[in-house]
Length: 241
Ligand code: FPP
Image (cartoon, rainbow, N blue to C red; front, side, top):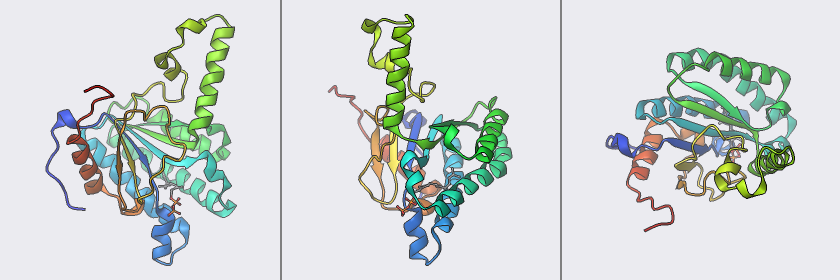
């Protein structure tokens, strides 16, 4: 997609969330194994991190592995986990140079030990960075997150930290994995599917949606900038007039 005019910095979303879809189809179209699609998808991750840095986006949340993705064949799950580990090992230095702070949400304890270790190492090494916060959603499912949030609120009530009357949407949000981040302003989904797929159900209540037919491995800097330019033209009313 062609590059667009620079976006007024005042209209840049603070938080972009992306459902990265279409890696498998991209590979199949080329007669390649699916893992090659994921590998090319990792290059798009790198490109989008760079574009977000250029634009001054503060938070980028990427749906890298859903709770449902565990149902895929073991060979594909293993390839994705190896790719994630290699990506983190490889790119942490680059994240340091770009002032990117890495974070992760999801049931991280379900990831293979080596992946968890590398993830925590990368998070630690980038913890002091003050630029873009890159949040990887890993073994993440929004319904599971909401159930965990409910349990956490129930516990707080039972232990006497809060009483029932204090439970508001704001308070509940503080019991979700995403409590440290603002809600996404812009939700992007690649590959043309019109679904949310159990991603940030609570947090995207008022996000603007941008769905493109471009497959994730083809989605690069200019595509992200085009999505942001489209967002900048929207009139957000949050239910008001
Ligand atoms: C969806 O494509 C993509 C995934 C399930 C995984 C996303 C992973 C990456 C982009 C690569 C690695 C990520 C990082 C952070 C290093 P699909 O396989 O469902 O595609 P399809 O719908 O065409 O089959």
